[in-house]
Image 1 (tube, rainbow, N blue to C red):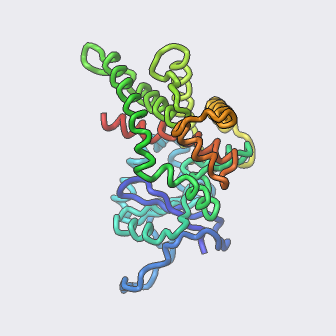
Image 2: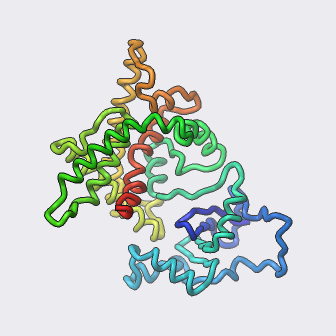
Image 3: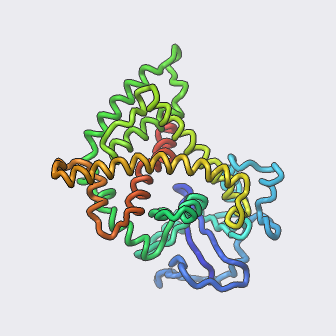
Length: 343
């Protein structure tokens, strides 16, 4: 049995990652795609996995060779996936080194996969390098890097705070105040043609300021100019470089898992700065919160997010640090892109 897990890449595409060596049986953490309803009539015999169409591949590298020799560019991979769909149809198999990727394009097929997720779906990490870095540095892996019972434990602990509209509404006034300051800054940055030239960096600083208000309930000065904005600019640039390097290493043989390649050393140094700076902000906020509690001067609703996390007995200090770090930084790579495209 193959170790099967899936990940959405876009609204019309679902991708499975098949782990494990050929010929070796892997029986744990299998995604429940075999739980097909009995009302589905199968008129043809089930074809073998090897019958799934896809581009030719070679041992060790798989289909990575064109990227290694410059025939294809990693930055154009989303176009390559569309080409695979057009050439091979709604189900396509690719081989990336030791991993096999199965792209699912038909919405009904995608629905079937997610309908059979079960209580604890198995989802691969968005950034394998982040998972590896956290393990290497004895950190909590965080929600995005775990599965099974451990994932369910963490998700259950934070879902009330993050997913319920009533809880989210607490942050509306905070976000509105930051949004007003961001709009004023956008207006001030307009040039003679009505364009904001540095929008790609202004938006993530807006997002970081908003996230900082949620996590620490204080302004980080990301939109105020001076030293504080310089710090936020460096954090934004560091996060962008981390994503670029992580993407490059995802399209590799992932040898960094066995020895420290120069590229991984560069990535690790960037991660050190991002985590170190962010963890310092989180630690300062936690210490201030503990001091307010000890002095019995904590106001109702003050430090709402951190207070909730610290009240959950099932969360360790490491869990609290990484969950807060994720809330603080994840928007730089998600909300940022949505804003940029929308504007």
